[in-house]
Image 1: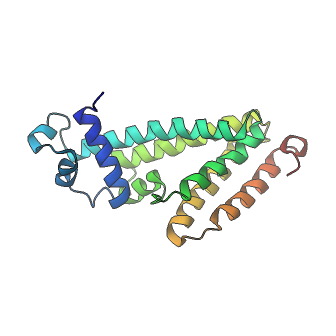
Image 2: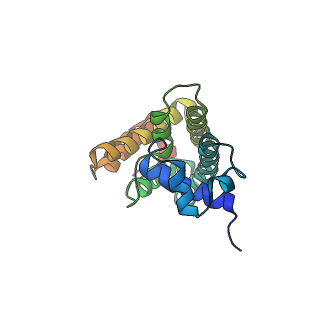
Image 3: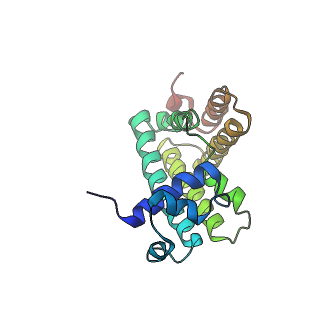
Length: 195
């Protein structure tokens, strides 16, 4: 079944925005990718800003779903293993040939004003990931699930940024070490296993 024009616009914009930045991509580039005119574009979106927000919604939905599935798949039934599996997923992301940084960190940097709708979308995504990690930490009987989730999310975001900025392949090793210390600080030894 052929993709709709709207979904092709979102897919092209997503790819271009991630690679070249939201402000670095003109609407004409996206229209050329999709092969439509501005008149046809305006049948689907009122402006580039509206397209940006649709891309952010689409990326947010995909990331939340895929991230959770991968963590559960790699961590199995053990909540402690799922906490560690967060960094298996981070490693998969930062080792990708297409890696250009965390999509939502990039958004927040390009749209730094906290009231900007794009910045709000980035913050919502980060909040959703934190809630997901908090739920896992609760199941792991962490002493303070929210504090553990905040520390692990900080380590994940640090890994995304460090790898993007420095290219250091050891980034994930440092992130895993820091995460393990955090997990052990909040979860009883009998729960964490003996890695």
